[in-house]
Image 1 (cartoon, one colour):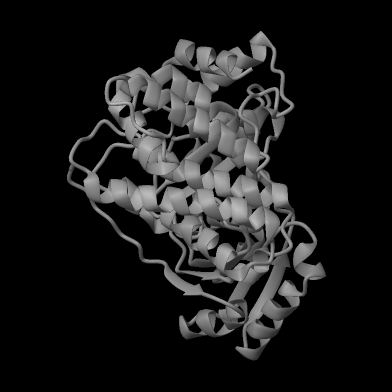
Image 2 (cartoon, rainbow, N blue to C red):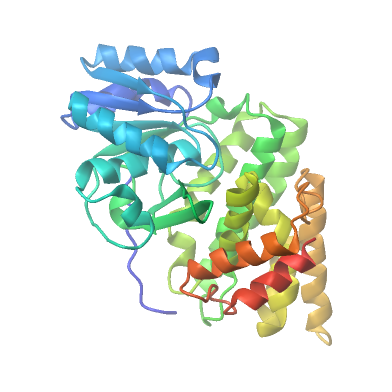
Length: 395
């Protein structure tokens, strides 16, 4: 086990009706004016926004609604939010939604607290440890952004198209995260299952490591993976099962708050490869990951066959072949594909309805490699040519 630092300062407020407590939570922290950041129309249609407004008013807080968040959120919209906060003297930013709304709010908070061009932060030209105060109300079990230190944003450029870039620092962990599983009841099933896949992937990106003697976190990770695998199948047949929704929502936070990465070096190559699909084709995040994971796995598994065999046995209950661990490892990858199909997730680019040209594959591979200064992945280091082969395997 490697040395590590682990910090989870986000206060979790979990359970039925908890989104009605948001005003009290912000008031107790001494803030006065709130920017509410969200996207779509479901908050108005389901009465969630009205409940939040009422809670803020009851606490004596002013607020400004700022909508316009889209999947794969844009830096341009965050920059507009920064201007509103500065003009209106906003002192707290509240995101309502999933990872897109929370990441966009984090970007706004970075912009408010710093005086450099916001795009420079995500392009790696500057760094910071400063961010404006923010919290969130989560409405989907997926990215875990409500407790993570990461912020992912799309940057529209004139010469390179859309660049999906991230910035990771513990200052970006929200002050609080309100998590009411009831708010996920009305999500489309494809979005629910895509979120479950993302939770699995956040855990698997850390699980596939070459660091030894990490049994404790392995067991925590395997328990999380098995739970999400089973609950995702249940939710298809029982969409308003509170306990299943609660398990998925809490798993989303635990998968990405850093716990399952302690003491090891993770991978995250699949995320970088999938990000480029989302940037170029606006693919749903979780689906972009499942579309390429098994191709990544088949490309890298011989780096550590034992780790893939352990995944097969402990997560998918594959009967181990001790005389041929490679067979066991490959059956685990096959079981992953079968599970993805059971919940309606793609395992190839064709199933994702994306057929990229050779030129597009080259461009995505180059951009993915650039995010790691030419090399991505901790399980097996991948250069541009490796990434190209993985995209081609996923066609």
